[in-house]
Image (cartoon, rainbow, N blue to C red; front, side):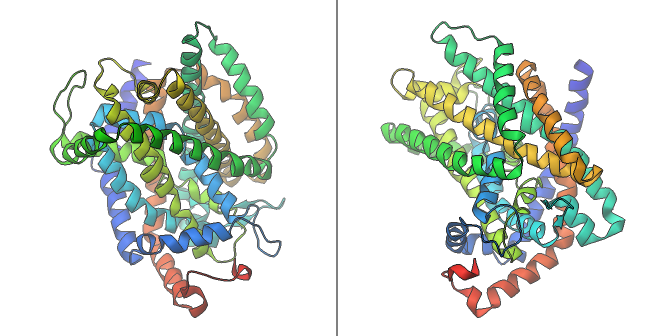
Length: 467
């Protein structure tokens, strides 16, 4: 185990801590933002209109899910433990300043997500059994040509591995820790094996039903859990409104000056704030990771740019809204200054101290369970589509069965090692995807210019027949 941890640390330092992924991700975000003439920042009202009108699927459009449900499937995987546990980890490891760099990556990530979703629809394939499959492996193969298939295969291999770790083990581990902690408050002992069996049973009911069944579940689950968490977080911030300005001051000062040791906090440098802010942002909103285009490729939409507009809203919902609420609640509660507190339970402690009784713990536990379970659903589809690319369309059902029976494994694992492995796998997935995005960027720039250049596409309001 020590050898594995050391090996993961070396890769983590090289890819995420060294001069590889972080500069590459930032460069890609800046380059794509300029190349798109800041469409993701200028056209966000247009994107919300497109999202609203994409709630309904049309039989004449090719795809499996409505544009709205495709985004919900994407958000089901991105809005997960990273929004609760990941933000806490970013603050504990990088200080409050890490939150600022999470915001920066989210804003740049809107351009990245726009390109990912656009390319996913343009270069998607259809399997013999009617599945619409897409994502980095397909726009690498179909967009860059056969000579790049090795890069597509690398992404698919890393994607399958990450689905088991990021989308399965981390989520079930965090569900177990927080549910057990909740019952401990009432002196009720819940054995981990019982949690494992319960999660296996629930996951099997949903996962073995296929994409459209999963899409129907996340289409209802994601908006509900987001509203629940946002309302609870905003209520706490309203009750502690006088502390909010200081929380923002900690974020901005820590981003450029580091954070001195205070209370139980050991202090951080600016470099650590940047590193952990970007790493946790990548793990949270998955901009550049290459997972969300797998979901967007299933959308029933004719024009790829239209799904790109919807896809770019992912980092906005995930990081700008949800992660920010988590961070602000943690900072106004001062729980991050308590010695020996775990990032797995920090957010729950923060909500608990800011709300009467055990209401905060219940709120965080329920939303974390919903967030994590929705992530399991989304990542099952991601891993399945990677398996289809490598092994053929007949691999779909066997993969879902294997994924389902691995659900309990995370409950019994050590969270620190699982998180370390997850971050490494995310970095390994991001590299092939970012290379493809930059090489195919002229295609996206041209399609975007053409889309907004058409008179009937230039207006924000269009007829339903265009959707």
